[in-house]
Length: 310
Image (tube, rainbow, N blue to C red; front, side):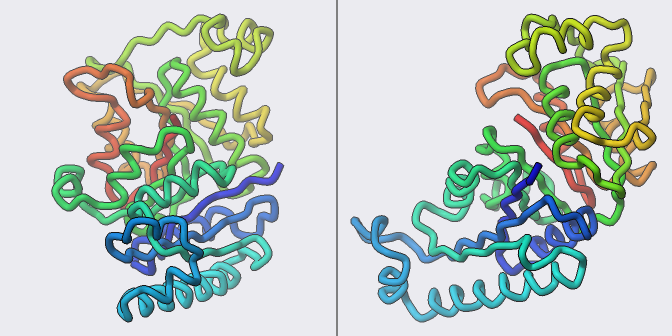
């Protein structure tokens, strides 16, 4: 099945890192397509300009905005060539450059929600969440607002094709496994390790089959969510059903440690995992004083990609 990824680019080293990441992960695979989407900031629009045609809108812009627009065009064209040299065929890549109408982050999110994409990929600066809050970065805004489309964030240069999938028995981690399996179906490069932490602050989750039968069907849930070791076998089954090789699925459990987010990050560094894949609760869900595990992983992750589902 064809997969379609929206890649937000801006000509920076951060978006170049993101392009390098996908080209290494999906080189020579044909059933995945990328749309490179660049939004050019142009300041506050006059009332009524939101509905003006892009070409007409461009004629009213200041010279510096026009220069940025042309530079963005050159960048996406060169990016297509770079991806081609790295094994992503030109026919797998489409591009568009838009003048900002609602703000860069909102424009990217609007495109992600309207374009039937399977994921949104962005690069981010190598800084902590506190710094990003004060900087008001595009990436932190998208992280906060993106819940309907899986979000991939690349922090720094990532070369490893090893994936770490933390599981806790919740519907959120099952959704993350389902997304990961769908994206990596028939991928000959990737390795996936399912990881569970029983640390002091780890969440104990009891998932009843009837609670998620709408997503995977009652028969599947009755079969795979009632086994004693379903914490491992259920997400593994989702990976297998999506066509991922059983030989490249591994299991790891940690019984020591204080905090699961800290364990995840330490493990990712120690074992050279390039990507951490996690589910997260909805934007209205109540979280503990420690916030969600995925929030803490995102806040402290560096030189790694992370996929957030939900």
